[in-house]
Image 1 (cartoon, rainbow, N blue to C red):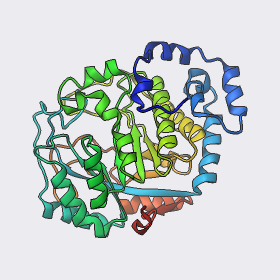
Image 2: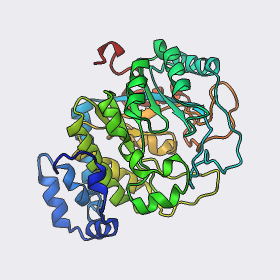
Image 3: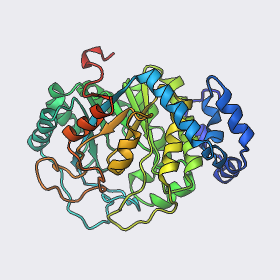
Image 4: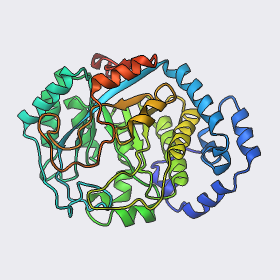
Length: 373
């Protein structure tokens, strides 16, 4: 797969229906052939997400677990999201922050953001993810810059999951102290993307798709990708996601790629997932990533229930959130207008105990920020 000026060049014109048919037509002997390889390639994703590969799920899990232990050891990075604003101009059909949802809106003042960050620091976190809706005229680059500079002394890694920015603004974020970007495409299928993002800044498919590349150009140490499982048949989206990750790895080799597969949960506007994605599907997607992209981080959020999260500890997940609140200020107040329901509401201390019981070392701090290039 040759390097191109933009990953959009690869997605443009891609026939997702044909891709889905090819995935369904994968034969067991093709799966066996890939699993016999010492180092399967990202191009083999089409085979490993297939129904034929689902029949070999135990083999996929076993191999993915072995690769994880070899690359990462028995460790788990812990992080917490800090929601700064629920203001949003988008009209995403599935999101509790959608502009046309009748829900309380809130943006934290600087002192409120710092107070919430201090609590997370006291709980042990040294990696934090700042989250906003997409309303940059109400809560934009200036606000985020102020928060990052104020809390930077408390954290060794600060990532942002906000609206897509220009290269110049990502550079400004880096100067303030941000070292990681999380920007989920939600779905790579342009038809579905247009249907579920009918209005707002997020309806610009290409601007969002090219955001991680701009983050790589800005020098971010971590680039987070993801698709929201349930919007479309999950397999084609997973295949294109892995192609995107591999493209970014080649182009920005100093950046680590992090991948997440959040599944649809309750939406404030009552949106029902168009496709059911079971736990076995999620496990197959994550195991495939680990086998084909052995150095990528695999992230598991509190969207998933405690039982599943506990089962995936010690397998191929390398980063987990803990004690998450999905409304602005939710760590110090009741919190109104959540983006989604967190199914695992255990405290960070409880998550740490579960990890240690399974022989996993919790990692509150990854690299020291003094090592940032």
